[in-house]
Amino acid sequence: MKPVVGAMQAWSCVIISVFAIVILSILGGLYRSNHHELVGGNEDPKDGPAVAGTVFTAVIVYAVFLVFCGLQGMLHLRENRRGAIALS
Image (cartoon, rainbow, N blue to C red; front, top):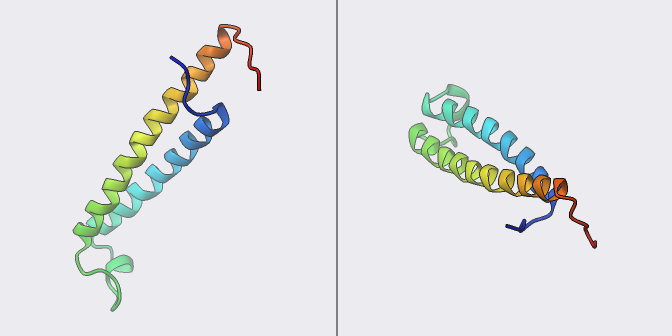
C-alpha cells in the first residue's frame, strides 16, 4: 500500500493531533464540570455539558486524524526500510 500524504505532512498531523486531543480533552472536562471560569459569566454558555459534548466530538475527529496520519507515517517508514528510491 502506498502513502496518500507526504512523510512531513503525516508526522506534522500526528503532532498537531496529539496536542489538540490533550488540550480539547482538558477543555471538555472543564466544561463538563461547569467550571466557573468557562460558564460563569454573562456571555458564557449556560449549558456546560452540551458544550463539552461538542468539544469531545472534536476530540474524536482528531483521534481519527491521529490514527490515519500515524498509519501514513508508518507506511513511509516501511517504504524507506525496503530501499525504495524517491524520485522527488
